[in-house]
Length: 121
Image 1 (spheres, rainbow, N blue to C red):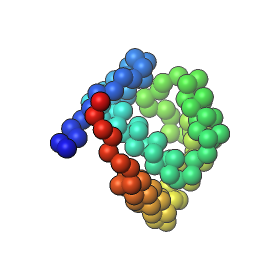
Image 2: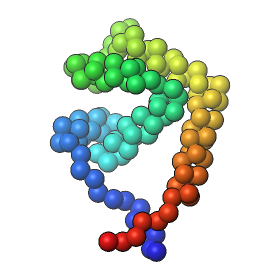
Image 3: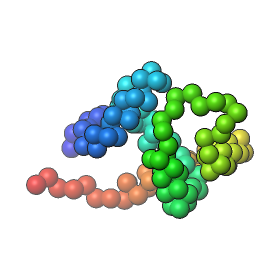
């Protein structure tokens, strides 16, 4: 069985791609790199214990917010984001975030190894 290609194509909503394009330009990334960054960040938050209700609240707040590249330093984006940032930073400093990510990766590798390869149609 040949090795899987390093990249695959996926369909994404045009709105998400446009938002990624704007953010990528600011951060000097490609659109693909920006979406990959967001996905990696989302996985890290999920593994850090972000609950479904927390994520729904943050997504809703983000969708309502006006995109602002450089918010004033004295004005926090939101109480929820500040609390989440503090939680993630505490987990990162303690090593718990890394440990959880490594555990999740090992679990996923174990699951992948147990799966039987699908037969081609």
